[in-house]
Image 1 (cartoon, rainbow, N blue to C red):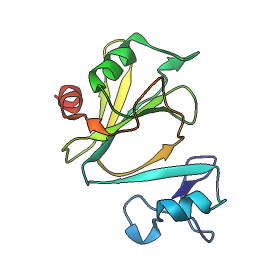
Image 2 (tube, one colour; image 1 turned 135 degrees about the horizontal axis):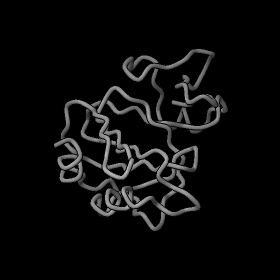
Image 3 (cartoon, one colour; image 1 turned 180 degrees about the vertical axis):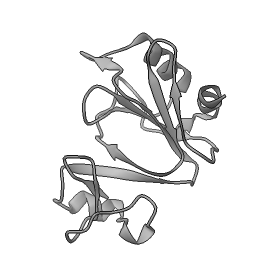
Length: 146
Protein backbone atom coordinates (compact mmCIF):
# COMPACT_ATOMS: atom_id res chain seq x y z
CA UNK A 1 0.00 0.00 0.00
CA UNK A 2 0.96 3.63 -0.31
CA UNK A 3 0.55 6.44 2.22
CA UNK A 4 -0.39 10.11 2.28
CA UNK A 5 1.73 12.95 3.69
CA UNK A 6 -0.16 12.42 6.98
CA UNK A 7 0.73 8.68 6.92
CA UNK A 8 -2.80 7.59 6.03
CA UNK A 9 -2.74 4.25 4.17
CA UNK A 10 -3.87 4.55 0.56
CA UNK A 11 -4.86 1.97 -1.99
CA UNK A 12 -2.42 1.87 -4.89
CA UNK A 13 -5.10 2.56 -7.48
CA UNK A 14 -8.13 4.80 -7.30
CA UNK A 15 -8.92 7.38 -4.66
CA UNK A 16 -9.73 5.15 -1.71
CA UNK A 17 -8.03 4.99 1.65
CA UNK A 18 -6.81 1.57 2.72
CA UNK A 19 -7.29 -0.29 5.98
CA UNK A 20 -4.72 -2.23 7.99
CA UNK A 21 -7.42 -4.79 8.80
CA UNK A 22 -9.26 -5.15 5.47
CA UNK A 23 -7.29 -7.32 3.02
CA UNK A 24 -9.49 -6.22 0.13
CA UNK A 25 -7.88 -2.76 0.32
CA UNK A 26 -4.29 -4.02 0.27
CA UNK A 27 -2.02 -4.14 -2.74
CA UNK A 28 0.99 -6.18 -3.72
CA UNK A 29 4.52 -4.85 -3.58
CA UNK A 30 4.55 -4.71 -7.40
CA UNK A 31 1.37 -2.63 -7.47
CA UNK A 32 2.50 -0.28 -4.70
CA UNK A 33 5.98 0.21 -6.14
CA UNK A 34 4.64 1.31 -9.54
CA UNK A 35 1.89 3.53 -8.13
CA UNK A 36 2.42 7.29 -7.86
CA UNK A 37 -0.24 7.81 -5.17
CA UNK A 38 0.81 9.51 -1.96
CA UNK A 39 4.39 9.99 -0.83
CA UNK A 40 5.65 6.50 -0.08
CA UNK A 41 5.01 2.84 0.60
CA UNK A 42 4.22 0.88 3.70
CA UNK A 43 3.70 -2.63 5.00
CA UNK A 44 0.69 -4.20 6.72
CA UNK A 45 1.47 -6.39 9.70
CA UNK A 46 -1.00 -9.24 9.44
CA UNK A 47 0.04 -11.68 12.17
CA UNK A 48 2.26 -13.83 9.95
CA UNK A 49 5.23 -13.62 12.33
CA UNK A 50 6.76 -10.39 11.00
CA UNK A 51 6.91 -7.71 13.69
CA UNK A 52 8.01 -4.10 13.88
CA UNK A 53 9.47 -2.32 16.88
CA UNK A 54 8.88 1.39 16.32
CA UNK A 55 11.14 3.79 18.22
CA UNK A 56 10.06 7.42 17.86
CA UNK A 57 12.13 10.50 18.69
CA UNK A 58 15.32 8.54 19.31
CA UNK A 59 17.58 9.77 16.51
CA UNK A 60 19.34 13.13 16.42
CA UNK A 61 21.98 13.91 13.83
CA UNK A 62 22.29 10.21 13.04
CA UNK A 63 22.97 9.31 16.68
CA UNK A 64 20.67 7.14 18.76
CA UNK A 65 19.56 8.16 22.23
CA UNK A 66 21.10 5.90 24.91
CA UNK A 67 17.78 4.13 25.60
CA UNK A 68 17.41 3.36 21.88
CA UNK A 69 21.03 2.16 21.57
CA UNK A 70 20.26 -0.61 24.06
CA UNK A 71 17.23 -1.75 22.07
CA UNK A 72 19.02 -1.66 18.72
CA UNK A 73 21.93 -3.65 20.18
CA UNK A 74 19.51 -6.22 21.63
CA UNK A 75 17.81 -6.59 18.23
CA UNK A 76 20.93 -8.17 16.76
CA UNK A 77 21.29 -8.86 13.06
CA UNK A 78 18.00 -7.68 11.54
CA UNK A 79 16.82 -4.95 9.19
CA UNK A 80 16.51 -1.50 10.77
CA UNK A 81 15.53 1.60 8.87
CA UNK A 82 15.15 5.31 9.56
CA UNK A 83 11.51 6.40 9.83
CA UNK A 84 9.99 8.99 7.46
CA UNK A 85 10.47 11.78 10.03
CA UNK A 86 14.20 11.05 10.22
CA UNK A 87 13.98 11.07 14.02
CA UNK A 88 12.97 7.45 14.63
CA UNK A 89 13.78 3.91 13.58
CA UNK A 90 11.77 0.84 12.66
CA UNK A 91 13.27 -2.50 13.70
CA UNK A 92 11.90 -5.29 11.50
CA UNK A 93 12.11 -8.97 12.29
CA UNK A 94 10.31 -12.14 13.27
CA UNK A 95 8.67 -13.09 16.56
CA UNK A 96 5.53 -14.80 17.80
CA UNK A 97 3.34 -12.18 19.39
CA UNK A 98 -0.44 -11.96 19.60
CA UNK A 99 -1.04 -8.34 20.58
CA UNK A 100 0.92 -5.14 20.17
CA UNK A 101 1.96 -2.99 23.04
CA UNK A 102 3.33 0.46 23.79
CA UNK A 103 6.18 0.30 26.29
CA UNK A 104 7.46 3.35 28.19
CA UNK A 105 11.15 2.94 28.89
CA UNK A 106 13.61 4.30 31.42
CA UNK A 107 15.36 7.34 30.00
CA UNK A 108 12.19 8.77 28.50
CA UNK A 109 11.90 6.50 25.49
CA UNK A 110 8.92 4.68 24.09
CA UNK A 111 8.81 1.49 22.02
CA UNK A 112 5.76 0.40 20.09
CA UNK A 113 5.76 -3.33 19.31
CA UNK A 114 3.33 -4.51 16.65
CA UNK A 115 2.62 -7.96 15.17
CA UNK A 116 -0.71 -7.35 13.41
CA UNK A 117 -3.45 -4.91 12.53
CA UNK A 118 -1.01 -2.09 11.83
CA UNK A 119 0.30 -0.29 8.78
CA UNK A 120 3.93 0.79 9.08
CA UNK A 121 5.51 3.25 6.68
CA UNK A 122 8.63 2.01 4.91
CA UNK A 123 11.45 4.27 3.79
CA UNK A 124 14.11 1.83 2.54
CA UNK A 125 16.68 4.06 4.28
CA UNK A 126 18.77 1.57 6.27
CA UNK A 127 20.08 2.63 9.65
CA UNK A 128 23.84 2.12 9.79
CA UNK A 129 25.13 -1.08 8.23
CA UNK A 130 21.99 -3.08 8.99
CA UNK A 131 21.63 -6.40 7.14
CA UNK A 132 18.85 -6.95 4.61
CA UNK A 133 17.34 -9.83 6.55
CA UNK A 134 14.58 -10.26 9.11
CA UNK A 135 16.25 -11.58 12.24
CA UNK A 136 14.73 -13.27 15.26
CA UNK A 137 13.37 -10.58 17.59
CA UNK A 138 11.82 -13.03 20.06
CA UNK A 139 14.27 -12.17 22.84
CA UNK A 140 13.93 -8.42 22.35
CA UNK A 141 10.15 -8.54 22.15
CA UNK A 142 10.04 -10.74 25.25
CA UNK A 143 12.14 -8.23 27.18
CA UNK A 144 10.12 -5.24 26.01
CA UNK A 145 6.68 -6.63 26.86
CA UNK A 146 7.63 -8.49 30.05
